[in-house]
Length: 248
Image (cartoon, rainbow, N blue to C red; front, side, top):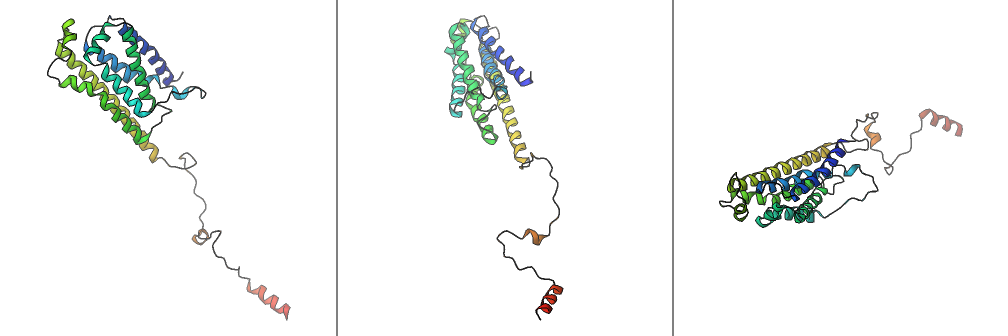
C-alpha cells in the first residue's frame, strides 16, 4: 500500500470518528472545541481524503465541481459553524450535529478536489485559488480575536468555561487563524514551486534527458531549403575537354 493511500484511508476513518464524537454531545462545551473540530475536518481530513484519487481505477468517476462554487461552499460552511447559535446547537450533539458536520466535510472535500490530482487548476491559477479561497475561511478567526466582547455570551452563560469566556473565544480564533494560514500558505508554496520547476524543465520529446549533439554541418548547407534557388552542378574541366574533342 502506498503512503498516499494509507493517509487517505486514515482520513476516511478519522472523519466519521470526529463527527460521531461531536454528535455524542460528550465533548466539552467550548467554542475552542468547535473550532478545533471544524479545522480538523476542513484542513486535515478533507485534503487527505483525496490523496489517492489519482491512484484509483481509471473507470471510476471523479467528483467535479466549479472552483467558484467550491470556494463558496467552503466559506459558507466554515463561517456558519462558528456562528453563536450554530455553536450552541452543535455542542449539544445529536443528529443535527452529525448532519451539519458531514455537510461541512463534503464542502471541504469539494474545495480541495479542485487542487488535488487530477487537478483542474494548476500553476499560478492554483496558487491564486488557494489564497483567495483562504480569505473567507479566516474571517471568523479575525472576528473572534479582535472582538472586545464575548460574542458567545448566551452559550457561555449556559455553561461557564473554566478557562474564561474571553479566553475560550480568543483561543478558538487563534486556532482557526493559525490553522488556516499555515495550511493555505503551505499549499500555496508547494503549488508555486511545483509550477516553477515545471516551467524551468526542458520542453522536449525526451522528457528533459540530455540529447547528444549532431554532427557539425556547414552553415551554407543549413541555408539550403527545399524551395531555395539552386544552380547546375559544375562539370569537371577534363570532362568538358573530352566531350569537345569528340564533337570535333
